[in-house]
Image 1 (cartoon, helix red, strand yellow):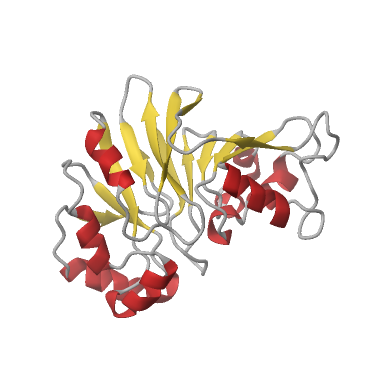
Image 2 (tube, one colour):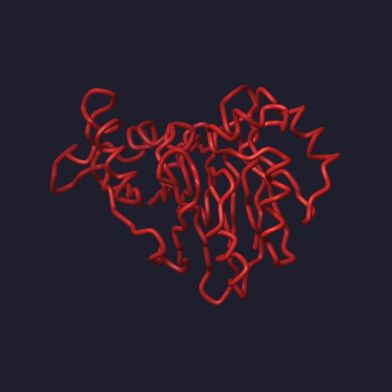
Length: 255
């Protein structure tokens, strides 16, 4: 299983792209920066996007991907999303006000975009992969994903979350877990901001990783660009129950 880190940050600035991973060249996990990171030919290879939640830094590039690669109706992009996220995306994004409703363009029989509902805790398959959406604790309905390769390894992606429980139980119960990707967004001096927005700081990250009983690599994403260097310095001096490493944007990880 190959993960290409297109964007690994919780905001946008020069050098920092918003959250988006490409798995085995065809499946995107979140879509903050697909069109910024992928050449046009590679954009056309993306066939499905699994969305963890509806916040802009996870969906921002979808309208432009549809326009670049699917607007002629020759093929259809599938967006896999829970009912709550479906409702938000349909009402606020593809609504003919903010952006054209590509679920009906160029025609209802051959649309550029198809919204496909998935259910929390119910596994679904995409080619050789099985994904299980796992609810986490964020300000809007959000699911992390356990991504398992048939006959291979599994990677757990928490998406955006404050302190939470269920996702760690899933990680601990997964026999083929190869890695965990977990968020950290703000330095601990901004703990109140993190708590109100349901994100993690190095302080709360350390507590959350205490719930992980598996000895697997732990990768960090969603660092806020404004606080990037401060976060890196704090993470370097904060004792963690597991060694942690920041995801490297632009790199490819193989599990």
